[in-house]
Image (cartoon, rainbow, N blue to C red; front, side, top):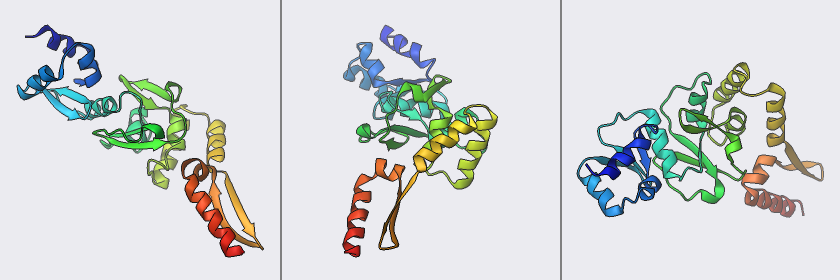
Length: 218
């Protein structure tokens, strides 16, 4: 057995039997040798930048690790996936959802990826079972982006407060800031209502609506 294969297996033992192409390259394993191991049935391609060891159990957490590797380690596990890892009530599915900054939105992954215009750092994440997960407060503030239903959002808030993952007043302040609304009223008629989130995430839509309102009111 090539000693480099054994070296590759060492970190995989802590990564749910998954490895990144970056780790492969750091060990001096070229693409030709890596492809040979894949063809020989020792490794399997999981995503564009991830590999898993053949014969390893295809678990949910292995899928999360591989999807994170696909994005170069710059994303956080979020949405329903993050909620389950945080132990929030009502989240038990095998969703693989991640969040990254909008400047990296063109990256692809074996999981479902959403982007945000708000900076994302390690301070917004917590390490759970070797995986970088969005902290409860930020996860809840991003819940509309993750397509949460009202019931899911309420469940996430209630259980996050109960588990003391976030303070109620701090969470309320964050939600208030995120959802603060602005209205444009012309000649006594309300033409448009938009939120801070709209301005942050879809400024072109806000500008277009404002321009339309001004034309109609002229």
